[in-house]
Length: 204
Image 1 (cartoon, helix red, strand yellow):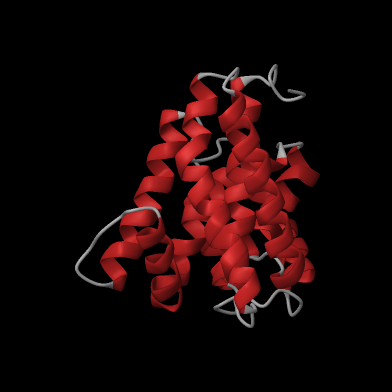
Image 2: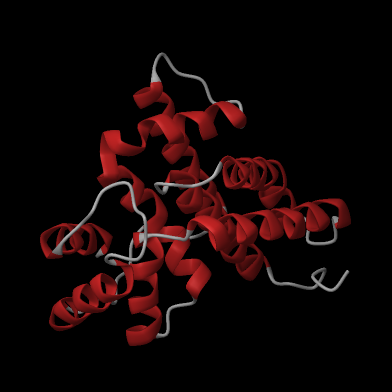
């Protein structure tokens, strides 16, 4: 009941923040099986409930399920850590005051796409969990990310940022690398060129 009056744009971005917690925890290396179960359940709950509660904030069942998803996602990343989505999102918050959930929502599909084949297997399992089909893991993984983008678009979350300044990019890269490397057990280790490529793709 405490979240009934939450505005739609906060509902959507905090929900996609939870999605990011679950997806990063699930795709990170060395995650225990217990974490995998939590992350998968969080993703399923988000797919089933986030758009419902975005459209109807008074839906208490959907609100409850999103709270449960937030708990599962939080428990998952507490054990398996987050990754480069968070590393870059934090730089946007620090430099521009970008809300954390909004930053994660936009960045998530870009990072997963840039990881490429290293995350196809895991993303394909998430796709299967939410009923997305395909002929192989690559097709399922890409379809899963397309669905993330569709959800963002339908909830009026932008696809890029129009405020990232060229002069700030070296600082963003420095901060993201300092936060993430070597602490986060990401599926692919990035250095400055990979972060630069990501940030360039994020700019409108």
